[in-house]
Length: 308
Image 1: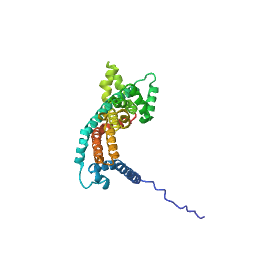
Image 2: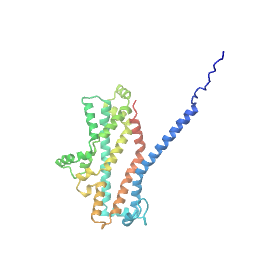
Image 3: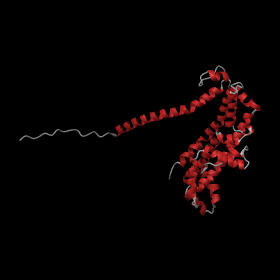
Image 4: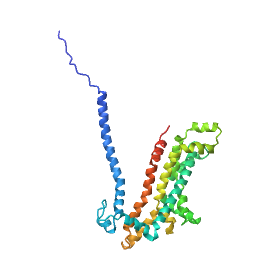
C-alpha cells in the first residue's frame, strides 16, 4: 500500500511591520514630491508678477519696452521713478495713498466690528428668523459686487453722498463673508459652558460679549479685518463709479487714470515707468500688513475650521 505524498507549500509571507512602513514611506514620498511640485508652481504663479513689477519699476521708458521683463535694464532708475511718482501733479500720489489708507482702514475696522457682532449673535443665540437671516447672508456672498454697483450708485446718488468718502466706506462696511466666517468661528471659539458660568456670576449678555467672548474671538476678528482691508485697498470698480474728484480717488483708480493719460498721449508724457513704480509702491503696505498679521490669520482659520 503506497502512501500518497502531498506537496508542502510554504504559507504566504505576511508583510512585516518594516515592509508596511517602507511601502507607506514610499507612497508618502511620491505624494510629497507631487505636492512639492504643485507648491512650487503655485509660488511661481504668484511671485513672478511681483518680480516683473519690481524689475519694471527699476527701468526707464526705453528699457521698459526694449529689455527682458524679468531682469534689470541698462540703468537702475528705481529711485528716479519714485521721485517722479511723488512729483506728478504736485504730489497727487501721496493724496491717493492717504485716501486708500483711510478707506481701507475705516472699512476694515467697521466691517470687522459689524461682522463680529452679527456672527456672534447667529452662533450663540436663537431668535425668530435667525435661520432665514443667515440664509440671506449666505446668499449675499454669491452675488457679485459688480451686480450691486449700479443700484448702490443710484441709492447714494439719491442721498447726495456720491463723490464723498462715505460713498466708498459705507458699502465696504457690509461683509457677508465676514459674518459667515465669524459665525463659524464663534460657534467653537466661545464655549457655551463659559457663557453659562458668566451668567451664573451675574454677568449680563453685553458684559459677556465685551469682557469674555471678545478676547476669544480676536484671531477671527483679525482674519476678517485682513480680508476686508485687502479687498477695500484693491477695490477699483466702486470708487470708479462713485468718485469724480481727483483729490478723493484711491490708488487703484488714480493709477488707472494716470496710465490712460500716458497711453492716450502715445508716450509723450513718459508716464509708463512712473505708473509701474507707483503700482510697486502701492503693494508694499499690503505686504507689510499681511506679514505682520499672518500668524493671527492662520490661527483664525485653523481654529474656526475645527468642529467640536
